[in-house]
Image (cartoon, rainbow over all chains, first blue to last red; front, side, top):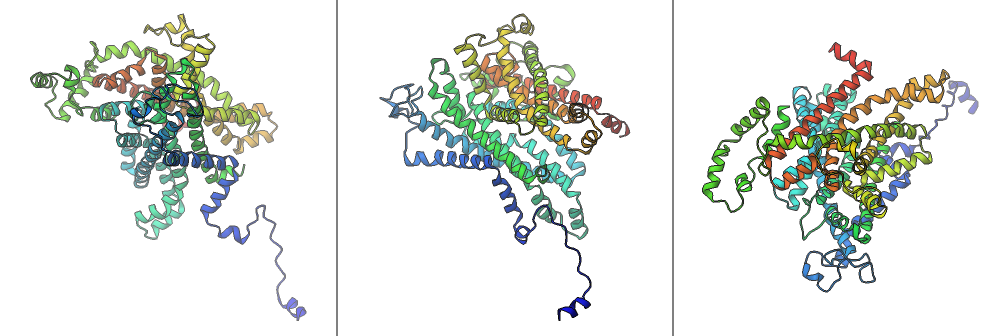
Length: 313
Length: 304
């Protein structure tokens, strides 16, 4: 039986050469995002950053719930020492108004992180929409839209933020909007570049040739393929928003008392620096820098895991 | 260009009644009405915009400050040299430090030096600029008092040469901040160039690694860096604003903060306009420099 088959069948094709990367069936059916996630979590520092960010967010929102300390009512500080060094009652001392510094870090973090994430979200939504439209429509619309961006980009953000905030009011909602709506220009430009590139790629053109509607191409081709840049840019925007909020806090234009945010707290702390009250600045500075560094690092790691080209090196 | 300054104008004007800012909160409605009439506040936005724009464009007249007894141009011309000096010296130092640093990091990729520099840059990048300034102040003029904590208060730009000690800290802070951003980009760009085919060819032909790095990689990485230097001017001026506030450096940035908190709209407008023009000039210079460095762009330009 075997002899017969050997005689009938053509000679066996040679074994395919061993691929450097094993393309097992498992690998092939793993969805794209999970592959990316796997690459992302190969990066040990990225795991640390994500973990730290989660812990920081959880702490800022949960600790005040579990152990409420009054951080807005000056009356609550009666009888509390001012500028007290760390002790068993106040683990990180008290600030110049007698508020507990540790509790205040959590409390300020709620504002800083919420504002940062919401402003970053606005940034990315507006920037993506604008960039997609500009890049996809192209032609004169694109030119006009990009010239508008150029005009905005020629004014440093901080000048514009200061101007707007000093003219309008200083409520929290307004701060979110103003930071969100002034930081999106750079993002729009990046995403516009992506949209322009993808629109001219073969698969988009094939879809157009087959009669796909524009909206369909944006939804099925342009958007999913530029998601890597969108996600990366969004991460950096959040870090930027937190930094800009802190700069505004330093100028006294940020969150207004009795509420506070990290920038305002750092400003209050730095004004005490000559008195040697280190606990009003260094713990918070460490937390602040660690949070922003981890957000930036997550952004970097995300970019790395989306950039297949970089992995080969 | 017109668009550039129309934007802040539209955003700024007519939100709060400026008459109360000038005349004080206790001004009578009669006086307010007269002031508004005098300043054309009863006209529509477009008419006022046209008046402002034509004054600026044809008469170089930026109006009068609401708060200071001076024209806006007077304020600007007094303070702008100091800010330009601060920014220019920092930009020069940034270029001198960041470019070699980036090349070093790229050529010794994943070495201890690379990781250290990347780590430091990350932390600096994540720091609010005023915090960095405060830490510098704390270290160098308080704990280890060798440097004055603020530059001389006169507005002459030449003070930078006559008494340089006071300028060290502001310039150092601004330079550190921009080096942190730029060296990362430089590293990335050089890395990208180093894997190109022509670099491999050069190596294969027996070029020494030093020669490969400087003759082939560096020259090709220069283009993106020049563009980036041009684009970093707004960031530099924005950083200068915070740094001027911390060090009490009498420059344009601190004037903006004063004007903005005092609702001195014409001054804010004038300064924003000027900063936008400076930025555009910077971009123009970057474009010209790019043409000088990269012949390909020149040729494409003449064709088009």
